Picture 1 (cartoon, rainbow, N blue to C red):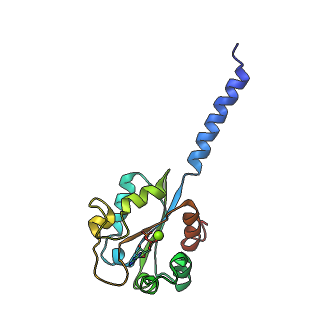
Picture 2: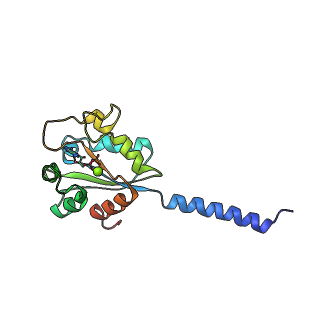
Length: 163
Ligand code: DAT
Ligand code: MG
């Protein structure tokens, strides 16, 4: 015989889990780097994010501060491209955004394409919109968080009010 109380509990649990899952979908930190911002590609990047189905939680235009870049790129300190990278990221305004949606961390990295714009496949942001200019650092239009831990850390750097 069906236990109506247990059945109702199960339905309620499923509903709560669904509600909870939708209330806390994954978030990622996206930067439209100074090359992308300068070239007027912010809208094109946001268009691709929205066309994919991810939702903008926050977006702002800002001049990156040295402390923000030191924190953001701490993992690359000491690498040959680190100083050129910080200089490039300081070379003009950038747009920072928090996007939301299940799987959006990996999903945006797929939209962005490979780090090296020469290798990035056509159809990706970097493949379609970026190229190698022969400099010490690759200018590749966008940054996207690479893990949930990075996303939480990076959102705290660029949007302390959301961290
Ligand atoms: P990604 O931005 O794809 O996560 P990353 O975190 O390894 O790549 O490096 C940060 C940025 O530094 C990258 O977007 C472009 C630049 N960069 C990385 N590796 C480089 C290299 N070998 N030569 C020149 N620039 C590089
Ligand atoms: Mg990275």
